[in-house]
Length: 426
Image (cartoon, rainbow, N blue to C red; front, side, top):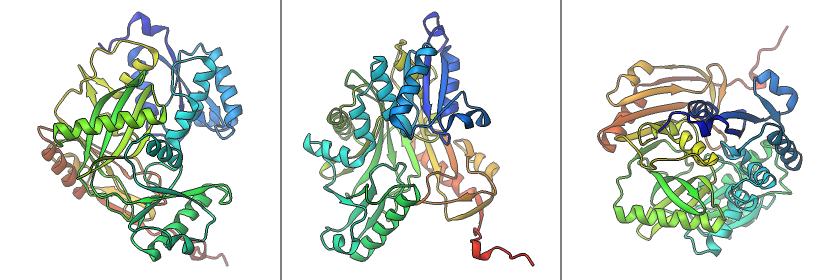
């Protein structure tokens, strides 16, 4: 099923990505196995692309110009499909696909999946259960806003991903601190506080799950449903363990699938991969977020379908119209732990990797953070220390193995020197 065929040999696909993405290698390797030529376009100035060894560098910051440049490049390269491998370029991919006439999500749908306020507005107006919310100008006085909020609540950036900047507040004092902290994160990212806003929404209790799916003409196929066994109660919402298959009842799983499909329809997402996050409580499933891309980080490596097809292969096959024999996940229980960054500082060493790897059911440990470089935890941080992967007979076995492996790691982080702490020359 995964062998290249004559149809695939003439297929060329353009992959849009950020320079910091974890996912480029997985997509390019999947394309190689399928005989598809992948043309990488990376969000960076063109003059830097040779230095980074990328095929093409285009600045995604100027959306209109980037759309024109990528469209022209796609024509020159005889591209059959445009795909964004992470959040950074889903809107541009949709614009280029529209210019070229390729089947894809509309630019409005892609934008809605990136902007949490637009997403919430469309979900609520279309009857999809989501938290109550309010859009607050970022330059507001948080002391005044704090008196108008129902607690507990959550403050969120409209566009940052990976739980970055998401903070729970239980009272007025915590709200002011959270709002000011998020505002500093937005400013550090170059946002003009006069031109942006912050989402304030109710905190929903319950267990959290993630849905990995694929849309074809508006029809959703759920490829995997992940349980998140660690409670995500705040004040920050750092994801750690994902395990599948889900241990929830068939009825609850069906309700999750139904709500996810309704969310995709509400946003206008009709084609390609989706990744959704939901909370489950006694009132049923509630949509937190839905993105028009597949799962982030290195998490996709635990998923295989049929006779060994990886998630990226399935997405590429779907994008260029190749046959997909099965959408059923293969193998036993699997899981991944996104290793959290415990504190701010300079990462000096990670020891115990072999001990962690030797834990039964562990299939790999990969440290992705660079030694001797600064690292930053949530809510300011945007990455993980690395990933631990596991395969077992049951989800309980996989979860236990991930926790044991993580406990075996010994992480040394030295305090980062501030400018006032640096030695002064004589």
